[in-house]
Image (cartoon, rainbow, N blue to C red; front, side, top):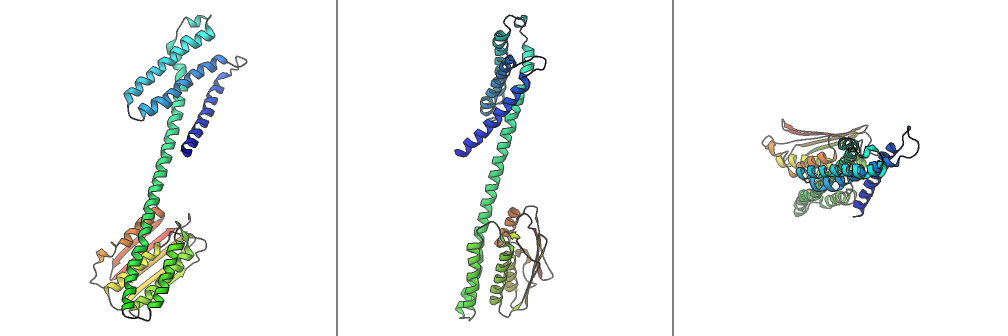
Length: 336
């Protein structure tokens, strides 16, 4: 309610300034000294007519697409303007003039239309601006809601995969179980407390990614080899949280699910100026159905988040060939 009042007050303020300018530009004449009060009254007649159109006819008929009723109402307003102009204002200022006897309806119409149309144009422009602002706000709210929904799906997806693995190690009484729990708790702490904002420091995101790689390596045991390299300094750059981890998680899942040994996963991050380049590749068994590699919930989720967080600012390439699954992601982080 308060916001609506502020918007209305702002509109009335600009409208008042606009009306004052219309009157001011017309009441002084270098050929006639002094204030031209008859011009003020003429102008007020036209302004009142425009206000009737703007705040009665437009919202009630034009914006509701009742164009016939609007046209009829607009014609009535013009007739009223001519009537007041010729039979009241003319009589008030020119009662003893021959001009009163010659009712020039067409001239009155021509004089009144510029002011009326200017004010209607002002109202159209104002309403269009407000409508666009509402659309932009609504689109932003929808995008934020969708992003929050996608973010809310990350933790369950991550937990589902890792708790299953932890359960398997616990059943085997593996000595790695305590270390896995510690690494997992560190990652969950980051998810719960550091990922509440839309963006996090890239340095923290890379630290968390390193923790996740260590966690996954513990579960990988001696079945393969993992490389993780970072080239460049993250500085104060920020990034949407957990974007990169989804690709690394998929790499471990797909590589280990399709083969029992000789797992190879290569991860590299390069930072040049404000651009992040991320490469992640893993090998997989030739019998794996590659069509399913890029259709998981996590990948669908991260593609949606990239589109919402970095529209026209990212490049994502995913390919599977020659028993290698490769992901390349480039993000412009300059605006974060």
